[in-house]
Amino acid sequence: MKAKILLVLALMFIPYLAFGAPFLICDAQTNVDDYVIYSIAGATCTSGDIAGKTPVSTPYPLHYDLSGLSQGAFHYCIASENVWGQSILVPFGSTKAVPGAPVNIRLSSQ
Image 1 (cartoon, helix red, strand yellow):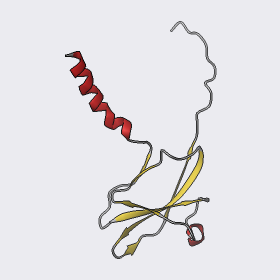
Image 2 (image 1 turned 120 degrees about the horizontal axis):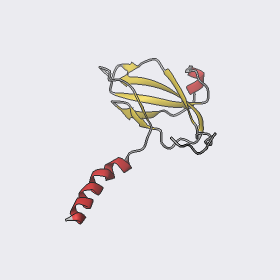
Image 3 (image 1 turned 90 degrees about the vertical axis):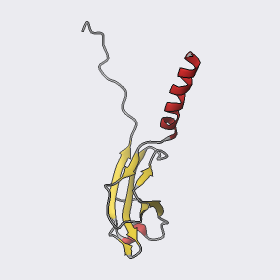
Image 4 (image 1 turned 60 degrees about the horizontal axis):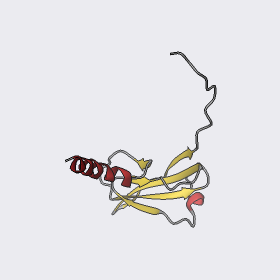
């Protein structure tokens, strides 16, 4: 009986382990078929920034896995698309950083 309970619990948590985190997402939009994402070096989205870069295309809704990023700053230009064309590019940037070492460690009676 215990083995069956453990098996059920294990099967419940396997999907949790299969997903990476964090994800790049956006709110739901109407008339959007997919999104294009350009990885860029700077924080602006001009035609010069994306020249020669191959975009990553993701289906609607936007849910792009960022778990494979290396440590440091990253910047993207994202646009939505449908059969009639592409929206303007919107910049997004963040930093993947490891936290600093704990400080002021001590014993307490509380």
